[in-house]
Length: 297
Image 1 (cartoon, rainbow, N blue to C red):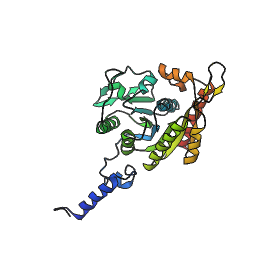
Image 2 (cartoon, rainbow, N blue to C red):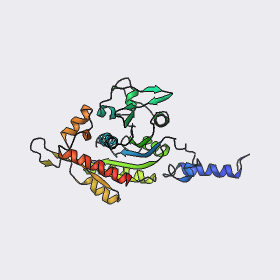
Image 3 (tube, rainbow, N blue to C red):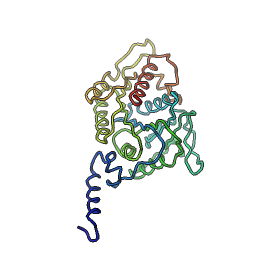
Image 4 (cartoon, rainbow, N blue to C red):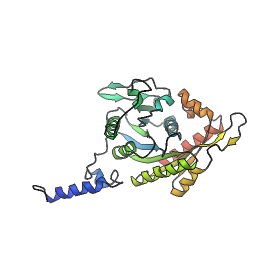
């Protein structure tokens, strides 16, 4: 025993060493009580935090995040959308607010208000231009995430949708560690094996954190020909549903590859704003309704 160290202090130190390597340290009771040496949950007024992640890039994760947040706000929910894909923050572009800058009000950061119910924070609002890269190591990212949670005037939220970068790194771990009332994660994948393999890793990562997988979304599930309307299995079909069944988690639905959805993102108008005038819109709406049912059911 070290000099002037009490048995309790020594026990706490041993607990910290054990917890620091435990994958469930972010959610277990000991960690919440500070015994793992982790910071406490931040104090923000939110009922549900939903993490949106993917095992690999290019599967449409940000598209799902934007449409989910917009759909929830259209249902009358107070929604915050936190863009934590710091090296590729595309959410402002998809919402048509990329020219906005953040302002301070009463010593708090004011988020960008898209509608009366939807507020957004993104690193893109802090960059001098859209081509400026973020060159940060983990500690800088963690500090920025904590600031986005604690120093932003989010108000009272029903949902905080967190758009995370691909993979299972610092950003996802930090949100799971710091954010209160984390409801779970939505995992976005495309049908082909190279994507579903990584989606499995994301789902297992969430489970190791002691959080539920809210569901799997299969994006780019077939393609509707813009000329004849015939469906083409460009990237295959059914991979997302297959891994949902394997992992025994909800399958939220499939969204086809559609040129109109691509245009919606480039034009800064979420696809969900459209009305039921296409098969793709109906698929998107069905996924969003199913997600709301799982979260609030």
